[in-house]
Image 1 (cartoon, rainbow, N blue to C red):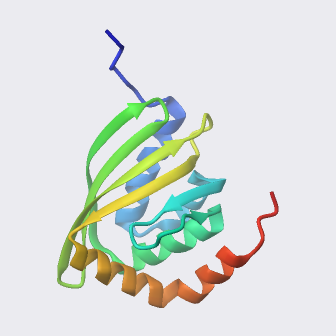
Image 2: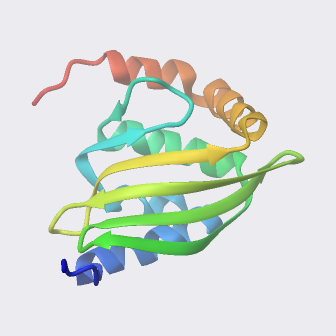
Length: 148
């Protein structure tokens, strides 16, 4: 029988604790040092991944500006460096729920995260509000050649 008892590494625990504080408080500056340089963000609103710390941070900053009453609820651990965080919040009068699926490296930095949200109407409102704030800037970042 496989060992299904998982615990986050100490560094991952520190990152997740800081992440859970940063977004609900809209203190997004706490997030940037938690992201690996080549972090990849999979948004529920766009087809292609958003690559790089700066681009992911840009999106997270806009989301924090738009999403009100954001709070984290349950945490699910898939291994020493894998976690899922259940959250909820409001976009205008629309309530949404979602999950952040995160993979961290040995240093506890977020190397990959994917966001899943529902309902579609709230996701669409969030995507429109975020896109209107950062769309052109994010497109320029995505078109920039990868130095690595």
